[in-house]
Amino acid sequence: MTTALIAQKLDARGLNCPMPIVKTAIAIKSLTAGDLLEVLATDPGAVKDFAAWSKSTGNEVVEQSADQGVYRFVIRRK
Amino acid sequence: MTVTLEREAPVGAPVAPATPLPTPEPEPEHAPAAQLHDILIISYSGELEKVWATMLLASTAGAMGIKCKVFVTFWGLQAFVKDTKRITGQNWMQKMLSIMQRPGISHRKLSKMNFFGMGPWMIGRLARQYKDASPKELLEIAQSMGVEFIPCQMTMELYGLTRDDLIEGMGEPVGAATVIGLMNDGWSPLFI
Image (cartoon, rainbow over all chains, first blue to last red; front, side):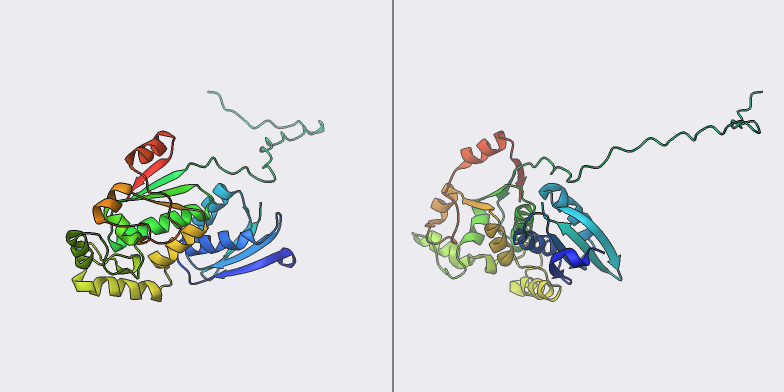
């Protein structure tokens, strides 16, 4: 379980495109390289959007799960 | 007739080692970031839905760490006049135009279903209900993420706009040659 290592959590539930990505981009800036950020989102487009965001920024999605319409992403800052 | 049979080791013979599966290329610890292309949005239209699309894409480009410039021209420039400005322009025609359509990002009209402002009002209410960010919020986010908004010099003169009429943080006014130059430098253009 990576929960213990998560440096920051971001609740983007209820927010629509592109706000989960935008808020994640803002939040990740406050972390240091290697730190983990946990993001919760309900936007169904988020799964593909986070993959695209990860590809362009190089911040890695290390964990991703879905539970009753809530998507959870754990992202490691580059 | 030839029948291919599975090779069977004779009883008592040493069991042949199983052919190992080809090992996949190990994933690098940190996958290198994709090659990023710079994006140039030409914001030409001033209608609510198109300004919204511009702001949405610009803020997303900023969030994705992609270099993005927005060249703001013609009707599009109306969205970049400060919301507080009511009448703009130097001569009576320019002033008249600003009275006929109020400038500012919060006063955009829809191209369809405007119905004297009822359409934009309903869209705005729905957007708040569904927690969509407004064009104004997205504009501020895009600016904070390094997206550069560049006004068109010719349009500024046409409308009689001064730098003081426009929102804070805009780039130096430029012309078409700068836009063509950027495209020639490989910026991917998007006309909205």
